[in-house]
Figure: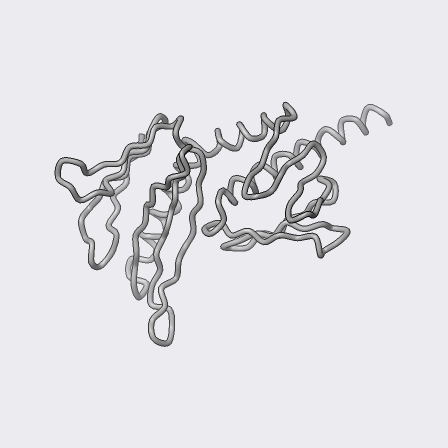
Length: 207
């Protein structure tokens, strides 16, 4: 179990407790004295999106808001966020953001990714971030890309899925904006890595 302290920003300086346990998340996101915490049990956690929203002033960006959204099985979201302005405590706030995300992956998201991968291996229907994952390909927007033709380009706040043979077959997904995009990327990486390993083993046996 790890406990973090969240201070949301200039106009909300209260120290709020965030507890991430292997079985639950407990966050002090409310302001009612008799009801301060939201608790999510592990079995209720279904997805995740996160990222940095940059706050613009009159002529330039003056701050940033770190945002983490934890989605439940009922498609509701628990929002964890905190702001900084004029780079004040930038390193400290950024490290807090990274530590929370790492802990969420370790306690919950890795298991969600593995569940999706097991469904794929069992030939069950898998759809993440509006992309359908089939036995040997993905489908989106009436387009199809075979796994052997699938490539990624990763950026700081988003990534692109595209065909190596036809660059017009592509889709951009944002880690913050698009539901479960980070989970999709991890699942596809697992599939491609394991498919390449399987192909290599077959090739080695036929040499």
